[in-house]
Length: 436
Image (tube, rainbow, N blue to C red; front, side, top):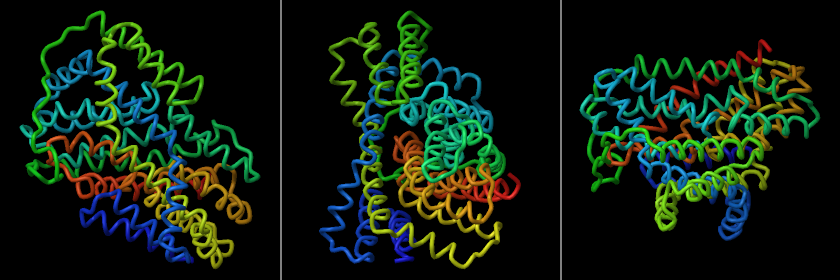
């Protein structure tokens, strides 16, 4: 039982590296975990399906955010941003990649559309990337940084949800902590992600690289979206009103679905998008985000199998049973457990409640402070989110970068982000546990 998580995640990783579709890879991993735990194939499938509802809210919010993003792009306001980037940053590869990281950061806290902006912003820039011989792996690292680092360090938007998840997980297991303390605890691990980004952009992926047609397996009929010159007009102003409205509702309700619905309703109510375009907007939103939403559902089912069979608990007990009171070793093992579990489940938000229930008693008995415990739980949850084939932080960048079929999800997004973010997170998370 102790090795169920490790082996099933290895199955997921190996199949993904062999370019097997990620949904098939997750299902195979879930069946492996179920069979190793003594379940039959049918029982494993039924348990996985029963767990898919765990991410139903997230999946629906992604579909609605996708439709909202499509509605926004319909007004042409994104073309203004794309044209500005092209005008100012053509020939400046490093600055362009860092600017994309900056734009991505806004999607977590200021304008919480999460990954929905990627398939709209990035495809118009692909031709420019090829002309400048930009290494798309660096762009993937920049996007993943923007999709993760802000919510790890800033308790607003998605960050508020992340830190509330840590707070609730710790409180339910006997350790009280405030949102501010949780955010403070994650500043050191977040700094590790900044280091990883700078290494990726300034060193690893700075050289010229030709993108290979067909590397991503799709997008053969792709044509560069038009980026005609558009001046700011009344529709764009009303679009910003809809964005602000969606942001306000999301902040006050802490519900992405409510926020996305508000944005969509305002876009139609203000006649920014004609009502007759409603079906097309929804269809395009589903086309954009549907696969990602379904991957999240299947990954949630995999997490259900790991949780209900006791596989994660067994792994933690096996890992912590021989560590004694050695805080340095306990911190390292707990972070490695988090890395393994999150790679499989693909969601830091979905992993934290599982890890908190297991980590808090161990941290209390080992004498870790409240801040150190929060840093361990938050970092263990964030570890593996970058680099996981099932994570929205990797699926999102690929959805934009592979629009022309020249970017492979595993080798061009998951492997680079795993190296440049999980290694620094592991090191800086361990440091945080030691010094806090």
